[in-house]
Image 1 (spheres, one colour):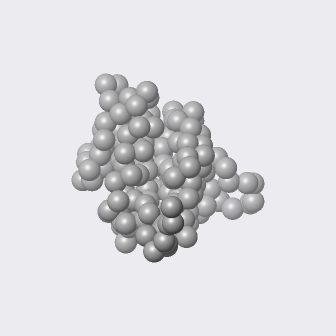
Image 2: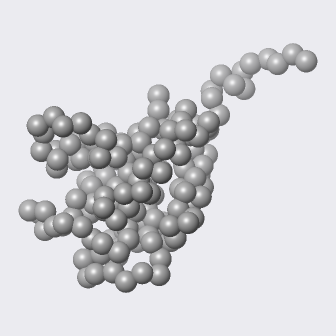
Length: 163
């Protein structure tokens, strides 16, 4: 059974990166066997409130990948952005140890983003540039698969190979 990844960020700021991350995981010969990626922009129109959709999906997820950049995003009725609300929902659940945070380096941020980063720093995080983000995520997913012993298919070691 594939592990579910929830990819969270300001959609507008990381529009290109979100699509690239999903595509590289889905098209990678190794990772596509172990992971499926949810990004909100792939949700079909269905008459459901957006907040319900993304909170339900984050609760169902095994891994949370969060990208924090320059723009905090729109503040919802709870006084925080959707990205921070997704982060809060995931990290209060049973899988909070599977929180993979990536913080864009060397940029100016607003006060809300700085406060969110302080919260995210309670977890191990990696600083990134737009050029090395994919490599950073690959390394983190590799560490996840090693830690959870899901990288090698269970039947693989049980097969006999004849020359």
